[in-house]
Amino acid sequence: MDININSTTLSLIKGDITQQDTEAIVNAANSRLAGGGGVDGAIHRAGGPSIMEECIRIGGCPTGSAVITTGGNLKARYVIHAVGPIYKGGKGRERELLESAYRKSLEIAIEKGIKSISFPSISTGAYGYPTKEASEIALGTVIDFIKGNKGLDIVRFVLFSEGDLKVYEGSLNKIKKV
Ligand code: AR6
Figure 1 (cartoon, rainbow, N blue to C red):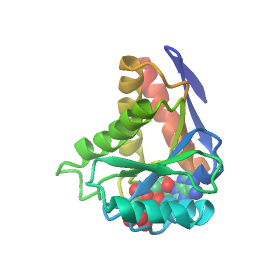
Figure 2: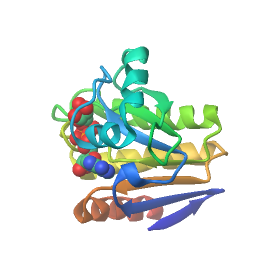
Figure 3: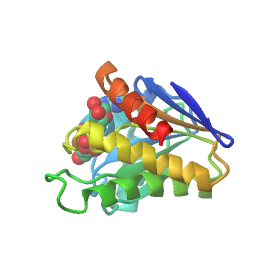
Figure 4: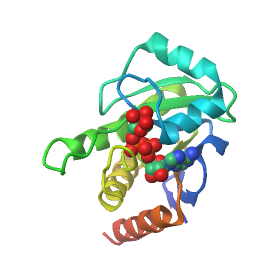
C-alpha cells in the first residue's frame, strides 16, 4: 500500500528489513547498542561486524533517541539505530518515547541528506508494544514529520508478517480518513 504526501511516498510492505535498498534502514535497537534478537540480530548478521564496531565506539543511545552508523555489507548505506520503549502497560511515557524514536530517526536522515528510509515496527517484538497502538503512533509521527519536512522521497515500513502488514494498513486507512 502506497500513499503520497507532498513529495514523499509512504509505503507499507511485508518483507525483511535487511534486504531493503533504501539509503538507510532503521534498527530496533536497545539503549546499550549491544545487539540482540529480532531486527537487531538480523541487521548485525547481514551487515557484518563493522556495524557493531561503530556501535561500541558510540557507546549507547537513550530510549526515545537514535544514532547512525554505516551499513556494512548491507544494501543500505546507513543503519539508524533507534531505541523504542519497553511496553509496561501504556501508563508511563511509552507513547512519547515511541514517537520520539521515530522522529529522531527522521531528523537524522534529513541531517545526512538521506532520501529514502525503511522502518521496522519498533518496540512491537521483544519490547511488547501492542502492534495496533504502536502502528498508529508510528504512522501518525511519520506523517506529521513528512508534512513539515521536505527531503525524503521514500519512507517505507517493512512489516515482518502478513498480520502486522494488515494492522498497519488498517491504521493508515483510519488516519487517511481524519
Ligand atoms: N525485518 C523486519 N521486521 C522484523 C525482522 C526483519 N528481519 N525481524 C523481526 N522483525 P524486535 P523491539 C519484526 O523484537 O520490540 C532486540 O533484542 C518483529 O516481528 O526486533 O523494538 C534488541 O536488541 C517485530 O514486529 O524489536 C532490543 O533489545 C518488530 O520487527 C529489543 O529486541 C520488532 O521486534 C528491541 O525490541
